[in-house]
Image (cartoon, rainbow, N blue to C red; front, side):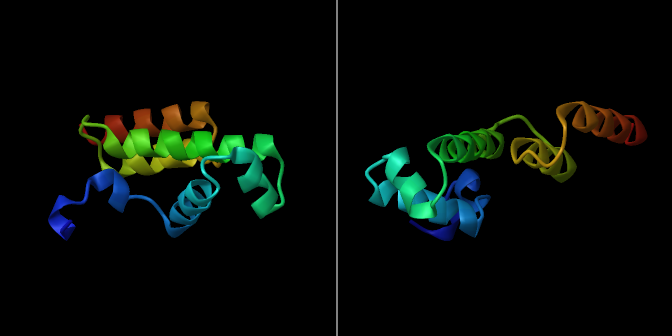
Length: 98
C-alpha cells in the first residue's frame, strides 16, 4: 500500500486512536480485556470505541466539509464540545462565509 492509496479516514486517526485499535486487535476484540489493560471500566472502553467509530464515520464521509466543520465534529465526538454549542458555531461560521 502506498501513501496515495491509504484512505483518508486512516490518515486522520491519531496515535492514541491507533494504540487503542492495536490493543483491541491484540485482545481479539474483547472490550473487557482492553478495559483491564487500561485499568478502566468496560463502559469507559465502550464509550471510547463509540467515539472512535463516530470519528471514522466523519473521516470517511463523502460529504464535502471544511476543516472547521470536521474539527467541530471531532470535538463533539470526543465530548469536548456540547452539540448545541457546535450547531451554533457552525451556523455562525456558515453565515460569515456566504
